[in-house]
Image 1 (cartoon, each protein chain N blue to C red):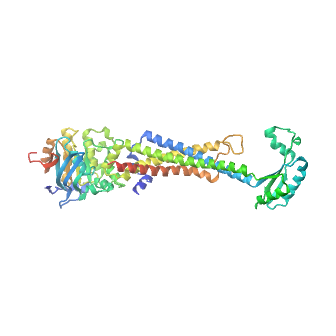
Image 2: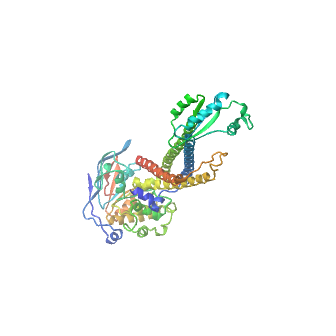
Image 3: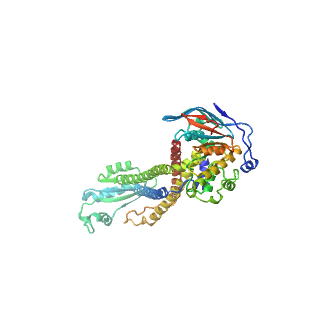
Length: 252
Length: 297
């Protein structure tokens, strides 16, 4: 079993802004024991990994190797066909539908294709997780204006998603992913459709979140992005190869 | 509970998370209007049939006709005997021998005016009105058989029963139509819900991604359908009531559909129909959407 434990780097002003508590104790947020997933034909098998709170991971591998499937299992969209996957200490296969919905609020997800409700403006899309969690106001969560400002979308808050550029969509998706102040952020090829400058801008935001104690898992092909990130944060690289996950060497 | 709250409280986000689709909006609204129109008309037919059955039953139930058809030589004496028997019978409020002109009037629709009925072997007719206690029909028939063998007592049962049965059949068919229309509403709402969820698959995926429960997603759809159905059925019920109002009154018996109207408490159905649509649509759409959402991972 691969066990990586890290202490998060904290930044007091950001914690204050986003209401994040410092976690001194090491918590395992995602744990896989002999996990396998099959779409008829086995795609992933013998996954043994433990991801602790505050860690930063990259997930690499060729197209079709199972990166998206790995992330989908982590946020409960797919249930392993065998093995045990625990998220926040709970076996994902034993979760009821409502429980899955509730724990998705603790996991922010950023997709390559940035799924939005195209008929709602950017601000409403970003606030969506709060609305569906039956909270009546934004007061008990992060301030929406500050969040828009943080991701550099204050001037685009009334725009509809189809009117945004690729980079703006990714930043809006990131804002939506973190508005509930989740413990874990999963990003599936978040820089796949944007240029290098935008990719750097997005990754800086993710690094900043990691510094606030968030666990980050990014699925990507982009080795430059990995190198760029590793210059700023202690990031680990997991490589999916031969249906299983291995910790990549320090050459990356 | 959250779902019920989302239905009735003005949370604009619940209303907005599902985009308004012109086709399903039109379908739900106007089908509900058409169905409510049909229901109000079916109810009006049922109520009118009920009133008619009641009226026929009441008007014919308390009266009878005694027909004396003896040979001409004995006709007067037997008529006298029959009148004597009636005057000694308890439970009869009044009786009256029809005059020759009245009998002629009865035959006029078939033979035309100025029929020389004095030349015809016409029976004598006596109308009988019973009092609130009624008379002993069997006893009277036995006495008449003994004392006036040519007299036949007709208590209108053979006329009344088929008419009342026919009216009650119309009443039943009216209510059956109401039931069938509600069944159609349920079937329609199931299909509309299915279509709406299917065409909004992306919306459902996004809502799930951000942590929405099935109840929340269902409420977002159900709320729209329930209110569209409610307002559509209100329109249908209103148009139906205006149409009923414009129909000729019962007094004008020469016109078809005369007397087809709502009376008294029956007008309260105009409120009950849209409310029923709301409840039926709410329950149907909720059950259908939760069932579909559970089947989609």
